[in-house]
Length: 527
Image (cartoon, rainbow, N blue to C red):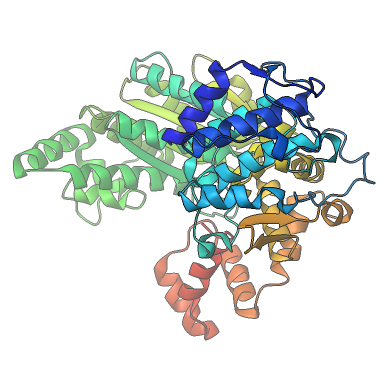
C-alpha cells in the first residue's frame, strides 16, 4: 500500500520528464513513466531508456499530464480482424522484473512497470501496454483501494474457481437515496421506499442494503417475500411479524423487561391476542397465550388486520427502529394488499418504522395484478419514495467484469463490450452468462501468469440466449438427476420449504433432499 501511494504521488506531482532524440508522443511519455516507477519501487536503482528502446533516448522535457486519447473499446465488434488474445510482451524486461520480484514487489505492480516500459516500442507494443496516463492512475487507485483484487498475489487454489462479484456496481446513487429515505423515516418524514424494475436488475440486493443501515441505527431488520404459489393469505406478513417477535424475545435481558412487554401487549391486544397465533406463532414468546379462543362476530379479516396493526404499533414503542422489507410485491394476495395499505396509513408518523417494498413493473393488466397496479399508482411520494432500477451501462458492466476477473478495467473493456451486448446489462443475466462461460471453458485461469484469460473471438461468436429463463433452462438440463428432482420438488412447494416437509418427501422419494437442497443453494438455484 505504501509503495502504491508513492507511485500515485510520483505521477501526480512530477509533471515534467524530459526526453531527447525521440518524438514527444503518448507512448514515449508512458515509457518514461515506467523508468520513473522502476526507480521508485527498486529503491533507487536507475534505469536508462537507452537500454529498453530501439531508439536511443533519455529523459528531457516530457509533460506527463498530456495523456492523448484513450481507447474505450467501443469499436470492438467492428474490428473483428484484430487478435482478441492480448499480445504478450517479449522477455526483454525479464531481468528487470526478476529483480523487482526478488525484493518482494507485488506481481501486479511489476506487471504495471513492465507494461509501461513496453510502451517504448511504440506501435509495436503488446496489447498489455498502457495507452494513456489516465489508465495508469485508474490501476494505481484500484491497487490502493482494493488490494485483495488488484494488488496482492493470491494463492492459485483461490483463483481456479471464478468468483463472480456480488458487489452492487452502478448503484451508488440509488444506495444513497435509500439511505436518505431510511433516515427520513426515523425523522417521521417518510414511510419508506418502493423499488421498481425488471426482473434481474438487483431490486432485492439493493433493498438488503437497508440491513446495514439498520445495524448502524441499532435496530431490527425483518423481511418477507410474497409467493405466487402460496395459498395462505398473510404468509409473507406472518413471516415479518414472527421475525419481529423473535427479535424482541432475543433481546429481553431481565424478567422485569419481559413482564413489562407482556403487560403492554396484553393491554393493547386484549383477549383476542390468541387469534393471531395462526399467523404469528412467535407472539407466544412475548405473551403467554392459550392455544384456542373464541373469535368475535367482527369480520375475521378486518379483526386480524386490526390486531396486527396494534401489535406492530405496541412493539415499535419500545424505542428500537424497525425496517420491514417486503419482496416480490407483484405476487401479493388481496388480503395482504389490503393490510399493507392500512399499514402505511396507520404508521405514517411512526418514527420507529420504515418500509421497503420491491416489485417488478406490471405492464399487462390481469385479474391477478390489476389491484396491485392501482395501489402502486395511488401511492404518493409522501408515502413511499420510488426508486427505479435499470440495466447496467457498458462502463458499469466493465467494473463488474473487472472485479470478478481481478483484472484491470482497461484489459477487460473489450470483453465487457461483448458481454454487455449479449446480456443487455441485466446484472442477473450477466452473472449467469459469466458462470456458464467459465464452466464451459471460455474463461480459464493461467497457472503460469496467475491471471484469468479468455478468447474474445470465441465468446463473440458464441450464441447466447437473450433471456434469463432460456439460459437457466439450459444450465438445469445439465444437472445430475437427483438435483433436477430436487428442483422439481422445490418448485411444487413454493417460496418457503418447511424442514418437516423435507423429511417427509425424502422418505417418499428415497432421496436425501436436505443434502440436495444445500447443493442447489451452493449453485445459486435456491436461496
